[in-house]
Length: 170
Image 1 (cartoon, rainbow, N blue to C red):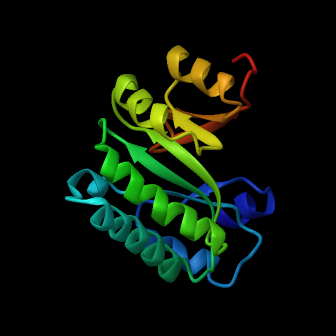
Image 2 (image 1 turned 120 degrees about the horizontal axis):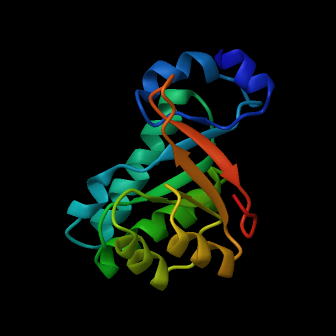
């Protein structure tokens, strides 16, 4: 099934059990991979700590999958973060992007919409938003010309994604 998804150029999310997925992608440059950041950023005590946490997760992911990059890296937004936490995270993310370790930066709305809005208001660096269907967040994405990736529950699987371009109707 994984080989078919790679052949079909379907983005594959490797956040859960990244080491397991590595057997399918080691040395493979054709697969489109997505990684969702951890919630550890919420516990950062200063900007440097936040940057270190994000950088460590990126390096851990790249080491596990045996590649130099992931196509999409999503910053997890479960609650409103402190400005120093966001600044540190963006420092690490932009550095990783400059070095070619991340191609596209996304925001993963994993909590209340207001928390995601609070985190997004200050930093407008995202190219993709991953969320459950939410009119407020989708309107903000449309205004900022950001693609939307809907999370959907699939009875046959644990989860699934449906890509909806910014401004398109569902």
